Image 1 (cartoon, rainbow, N blue to C red):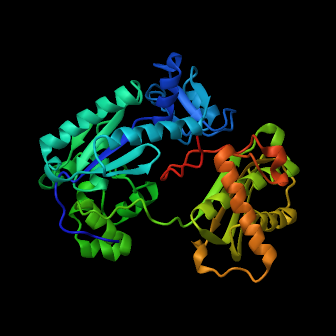
Image 2: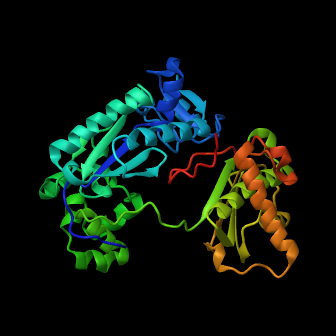
Length: 409
């Protein structure tokens, strides 16, 4: 945790694109405007909704719902297959539009952006004017149907919370001297980072509201929650401790299998494609993995979870070999519905010596060359034969973290 100086008002402008994926679909498909829309990677009943329009939210269609459940809640729900390339394109256009207002723009996720205000912009009226101008620029240069909520505060956390109180398409501002009044308007689950489990832990020590959490002394927060308690204290009091540049602790991908792929052989092919995506991300970030986790869900609701530590690897060949050995030993008797693969124990590749075996070094160069070809000519221009029958499975998805710009134009 890094704390830089005493908190000050009007330091951060935080922008959150409202129902982003669904709004982009309504932007590019005008007949969908005003209709309940849900976006899912797989539009079959077992698919998972990753965002819904505000028209759909009125029927309680939420992120994480299965498509079949969304349709039960809203009978005229329009389910659209996600289009990651288009969403990334709109993300870049928004980033460019924001760049016209400030050189200090930081993308926090695919649909969230933070702008660090400086100089005369760090004033109440001035920051509100900038927010209004940004909304006009996005409507004019990116899309007239896209809406955003904007918050201004002393740090990223408070600016985000402030903006979230005025969804959709609102503006809100929080000042340090009014924090007590600000927190009295909120519930625990309104704070980013507090889920049901953490809320339960807070309730166990008598903390029922954000105001009570804000009032808790540092020493007590640290006693109950250790380092994370210290982080929460400073975050709630306006100190800037957030950063989107933390190195990842794990890298993973998952896929819900379409009906024709729900068999052992196709499962191997889908696994091969997930591995290629993971390997590419490892090499992009110049990292190696020291462990692999595999999760498989079956048609009868049974689940298989396997964790294995490995030597430092980042080539598709090594990852394929390890995972296929694991799958060979797995008792796969039922139809698989979903597979997820992730790698952990990540470290910097430059911290590992080159292999004394020439063929290993050539192998690493080969997969780096494949990455460059696919970057230039499109995803899956070159791929491993093991994933040949699953080319349409596990398409590129949008990460809810900082965009990786894997799709090139």
